[in-house]
Length: 204
Image 1: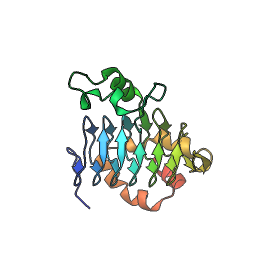
Image 2 (image 1 turned 120 degrees about the vertical axis):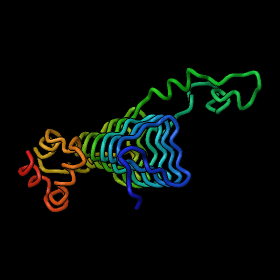
Image 3 (image 1 turned 90 degrees about the vertical axis):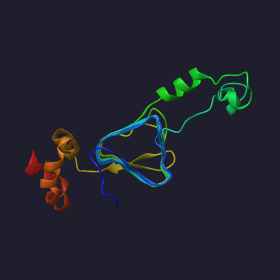
């Protein structure tokens, strides 16, 4: 594992990060692409993740081969091919369709704090994944996911809450993800050993 930095993301081999920003202690896996997106503090994506037009909170855990905010084609037109909007690839006298790219970039996906996006999951544009939620491996998420909910399937559906009733609301109120680096280090032992309710009872 690399030693992560508070000032620069750790980019593995062949990672691409055009027009993207990163908080402290972020990591981008081998061959991953993060386009027109932002990752909050401590968030990371594993190898060959493809993330576009997405706002990602803090402490997000994004597994390998995920696709978040996949871009779309103009399927209502006579053709949905690249030549409609990447026209300069095909003709010297044609410009790319700037309005199409602006509209595509505006369709933001939002991933909350302390989330886990499983291997190979796909999250569609304009979907919000709430704080603390878990998206199972291989899921295709087409609708918003409430905080601290586990979803799975194609299309995804709720499986169960991550915590018993009331714990999720208390965890969001505690918002430990906003603690500074030193406070996180001081509480590391409790993060490792205490279950959620016991952790809340100690730190609320």
